[in-house]
Image (cartoon, rainbow, N blue to C red; front, top):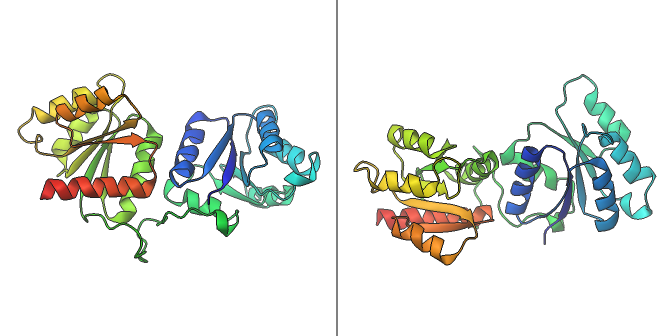
Length: 273
């Protein structure tokens, strides 16, 4: 099973990152970009959990909480509400809890811990069945996939949320991850590091993934490095074009973390054979 989680957040980048992480671990995300919309969505959808930014325009997080807990029906009273805020003042934590929030998360969120932190506030039956392991963890889950160790993955993507999701998925499993926000930046990192695989977004501004793979495959030093595209669902002709240019695989978004690990593991195994 999975949880239905409502996020009330006016910052698009924060919304995108939180949504990406929760969806990657199997949860359903409902989104609202202001307090009024958030209250309306909560009343209509009755989610399992509400994550609410405190500093919202017009109706802030405290006003949202007031509407949800004291001016709505009985059904909303049992839904946990977590505050998300950049705590800066002494006593802010106590103020949030005293106001009625069930918990809080500080900004910026920690992507590698975010899902496990959120799941503390929902029933265990709704927890993700995907293993969530923080970096440097020493406990191993025998049921989790076992990727090729010590692989260095160059991730090229212009969206910070995508890069963070991939990094948080791969690093706990023993991969070294090098991040680049553009094709130009990716080429610099490819020369500077011993890269075992390149994982590249297809659609990027300026030079897209097709330009980047052409540069990689034309270089005698880099051309043997396995090149994998990752992008939203596209037509079969685009995928075939990528493969014809030298990509060894095409991964489609959205993808859950454990499946991404398995795809990378398979590509590395084939390349090393």
